[in-house]
Length: 454
Image 1: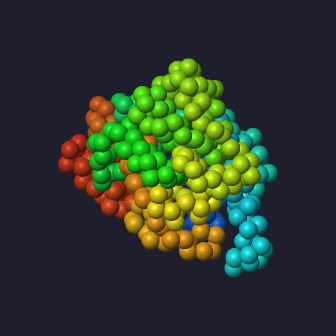
Image 2 (image 1 turned 90 degrees about the vertical axis):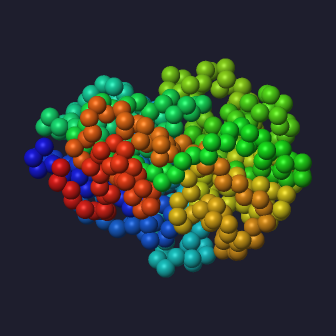
Image 3 (image 1 turned 180 degrees about the vertical axis):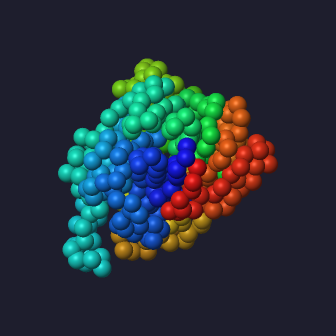
């Protein structure tokens, strides 16, 4: 491993923008290529050139398809990356949906800024467009889990199931006889949709996420929590509004709603899935039946409880309808998408309940709601928040602190070194202490763009 280095170009000190660069023997491999999201200074980082030339990176390996792990790929390609992008078949399918949606949002936001002259740059430009995404998708190359492959000379990579979302994997990189393991985003144990994250028996170096490294998940039953919220909201004639991640979370909540309806625990009211991306992602559960726990009959039944809206006019009708209902709409952190129209329509109504069903990054509207904001800026206007807000951490697809430690216990021996990424500072530092105290790991909280000799 002489000369091998690790540099986190993103995803260090924050829960977004994951990009981890391995360099050695004159070669360069990037693990994940995510978009920065959240507060303004992070979003602006997407426009700054990487500290390495895109053309010097020979291959990219993806742990999973979420935007904070794949969303910078079109920009990387547009600035000179010509190598292959390796991932599991399911990750490729999900990434295609997510990247096309991202390009649509980039272009739409630029057009909106130009109409309102709301940008200091004129004309405002998208970070990338659909043509860039199409060029990127042509560089994808799928590899099945558990079958080692060689993206670079002398380098062997293996995918293993990570839970979390469809296609998500841990990644082990064997380079000159030594092994570097990347968790990507680890899923939960005993998740109703996704399989448990698979253990890794050996690694010389571990690069681990720490999203929930400083907390334990609420032990309240998700079914009980959702039943209480839905029942109370509908009784007062309100709408249950759920900003839901299109991939993973929307499908999980539909599963719980289906269970509650089937058991007669909640009233039968209209359920809307108002997100074209979520609709497309849901269809992938049927396309990859072996990659999750649900059998086809259950998948069909749970999807049948909802009405799916693709066009904008149908979405507007949902916002105009004041009758009791349940609305799932992206994005999950209320950072964009159709959920903003619904928040503008319903957040000022005290009968409404807004359900936050996952991690909310600093700087997002979802985080503001979780922190008790009384006003939310939507389309240039400050909207009062009179709705109830319920923050249900147990719906998150990320392993909590105990589950991260449990997964790390699968190593036969502690890795020689461990690096902690993909977490806010408090979460990363808390996990570092637990890794050292409970497992005897030598752990470092990675700094952005710091070159670590391995």
